[in-house]
Length: 322
Image (tube, rainbow, N blue to C red; front, side, top):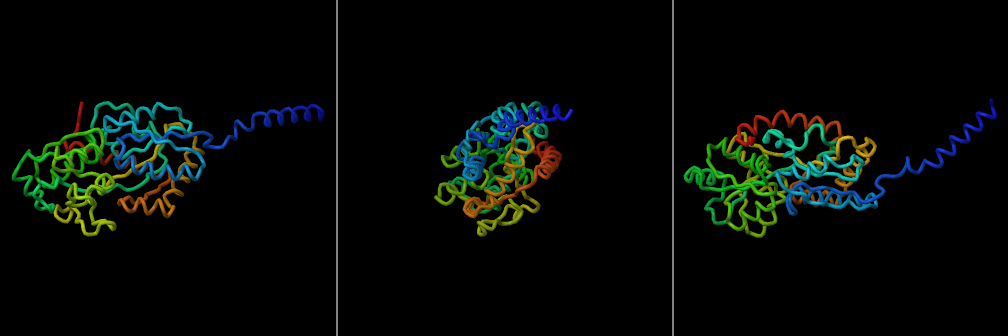
């Protein structure tokens, strides 16, 4: 019996030696694709590139950003949802991924089941900005002009149900305004339309608009958070004029559902480390992007809370599409 045990033990050891490298292959062992579901230059693109460039440096591997824009992010999300759950296809999306499930009667993914949430990346604060030709400099003046010209002021968004759409429709509802919604294939194209005068106003994530505010190509009116931001203390909040107004969101990192938990945990740790890096933190802070790292479990709870909260918001905005 002892001879048999020795033979079996030796055989098992041989198998482990032969197969061990395949079982213990470090992650990542090849380049990782990071799908940004909106157009280049938008807030989602900016955050994704800043964070995952650093993650790639930390891990000594390429994290290649790929923009797959369209349909309020659903084109890119569908691609990721159908990708192999091996950690080599990731996604950066906003709260819009949840909004879409309330806006559309059918979506190519389930926001709570099709993805494994890794962590939120940053809090998302937006800014009300207008074309310089619009004769307003405060929220009060903007509201007065919109009331004087019902249906004439056109505002842009990244798509039906996008952050810009819901933030502006919420303001319109609370202030009693009637404006014309013009959806684009991402926040960046909407900002370009604002600069050209194709639209007159937008409430869009600060990273998408602030450089154009500084250049004078658009005019900042107010921020969408409940209070003024630390980074731009001279710009009032909309809530200072419209009591109770507060519209903030988030950017998040995801993997396809079924991705092994050790990979999710490794990515969570590396993203936290990247966002704590002084240079990365300063870069994010300069664009009013406050890191909001969470555990995968905390992120899942946030997703469920937002799912339940956003249904009534979408209904009030009249954003339902069948």
